[in-house]
Each structure stands twice: as C-alpha cells, then as structure tokens.
Length: 238
Image (cartoon, rainbow, N blue to C red; front, top):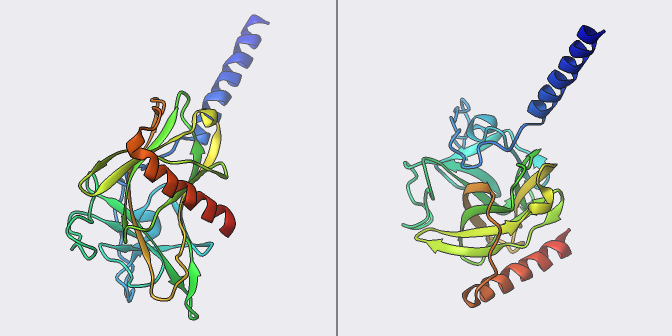
C-alpha cells in the first residue's frame, strides 16, 4: 500500500512539473533569438516572421503576419521589422538598435489596396513570473508624436517614464497583480489615420522586473499627461 501511495504521489508531482513547463514563461523579450530566414522571391526582401520573432505573434489590422521586414521599413504602410547593427539608419542617425544585436520596429500606417489605416501589434501569451512587480521596456518613436500602448491580460497598462538614453526612453508599468498568472502581452501602435502619416516605434529590452515602480517625479508629469491622453485615445478607438 505504501509503495502504491508513493507511486501515485510521484505521478502527481511529475504531472505538476509537466504542466508548469507547458505553460512556459515569456521568451525572447529582447529579440535576441532572431535568426531571420529570407523568403525566396519576396518583392520586399522580407523574412519568415517566426524566424525573426521567435515566441511572438504579429498582427496588422488584426490579421496575423507570416512575414516581417529585415533592416528596412515601409514608407507609409503598417509593418513589423527586425533590425540589427547593419540597419542603414533610414529614420535618422539616432534611430537604430537600442540594445544588443536586434531591435523591433512596429510601423502603423495603412494597409490593403484602399489604404485603410491599420494598427500594428506584437503579442505573446505566457506565464507572468512569480515575484514580478513591474514591466519595463525601452522604446523610441519616429516621428516623436507616436507612442506604443501596452496591454496585459486585456488591460491597458499606465506607462511611467523612468529614464532616457540617446535613442530610447525607459518605461515601466505596475503588473504585480498579474504575477503567477498566464496572460497575453500586447504592444500596439495605433495608426494615425491621416493620409501619408506613419508612426515608427522602436522597441527593445522588455523585462518583467521584481522592482516596484517608484513614485513619479515632477520631471515625469508631462510624459504622464501625454501617456494618459494616449490611453484615452486607445479607449476611444477600441
């Protein structure tokens, strides 16, 4: 009887371990797992999306993408690009790789034969690490009026700027209530909607941090106001 109980206990423990592994944790948050594979004959020189963004799913106007740009961007069309240190700085001398060997660019402009405004989303669903207090990432917008909206579990996260570098702002959001839960993480850029306008967001260095967010300083109030307005616009759009 004891041997049988021990066997049952081992089976339960084994099942629990397999279940935890199946849930997984967020991966490739710095985009360093990229290994772009070119799509033969593609007119835009695109690469397979899965090879450029392992662990991530991309959407343009709600349509899942199977291809991504590599070291290039569109002029007015929505798209997702992976760039490395061979990026030719199409968008200015400081707009490039933020950290490491790769950075993502989310472009929100138009899509389809009728030039319909199309939002761009980079998404991943997985387990928020136990002990995570904040979500942090580095981002840069070209032109400067653009911004990225971040949702976790379908909830819009208020973003608080923490610091700035040559080509990025470090943002943080409180996510402590999501720790230990499986949730969908979305980075979305809303299309401006005006003909010929496009927003390019450079995104990198996403981290689930055990550090709580400090109280915002006076120097951050302007940024908070802009982000609040962005949130209002998001709610109005959705």
